[in-house]
Image (cartoon, rainbow, N blue to C red; front, side):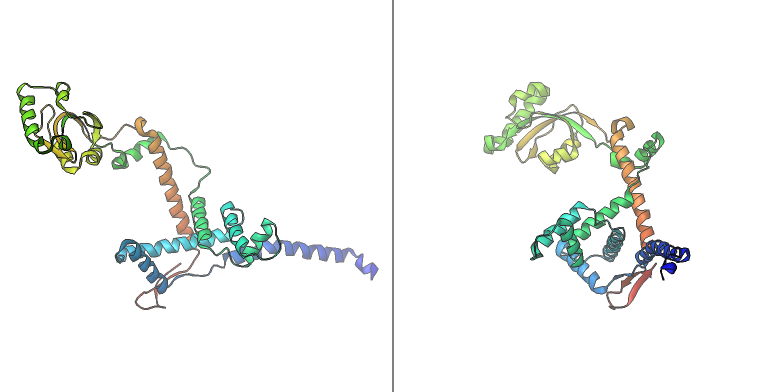
Length: 328
């Protein structure tokens, strides 16, 4: 027996068997990871999505909106599953913290180390958690969108992007104007008469805005307003006021224009039309937009690739249990 145990043949067989077992482990693990069960969006789940939509928006989703909700749910399910396949949860600090919080609530045994608590949480299925699910879905999105070898956008790419998205970078029209303010709270019932009398005086003399300022009641944000956009004027004075002043020609006094504060006699100094800025003026914003567009394209390609790993079934809401769509 001792002679047989010392036999080189036996040693060779044992070593070979061990090596075969070690090499087989990754293959078995890979096979387990690639055996993906179908993604099934049941009729009940779709109805719950629709109910949540109604609760949030107060109306039933349109067919297009329902389809978008289903597609988003499929994406999140695929992202979550692949994050688990890649074990992204094991080293994520936010996931570990969440598991520790849950274990400290349910653990009634002796004190354990953090690693023991996390292992116990996995064993109890506490990692099937809405918060953890969201964390892993977002982490998988970032992973798919990431490109560590990305090159900076070229000058030609930036120029093309700026031209293609003119509306995104367009600077709105701006108006510079002055006004003489007549306060409704200070003048009461006389505000209309005072405004008409002052307008006649301004046009008769005539007075420029600087000279006319002495006849104005105090106004919190001043009497000369430089480079105000439509939205900014609406926010300060209201939409009817903005419509009137944007329709004026520069260099004349307006009729009294009402705002929530009182009446205004307005003098438009000048208008700047909406325009697309030059690339140097918005280079940083354009660069960020190009990189975001690249990342979105990588994410879309990654999602398409991951969806191809699964059989996807969507049930018909009108006939539960009937597959409305099935795609690989």
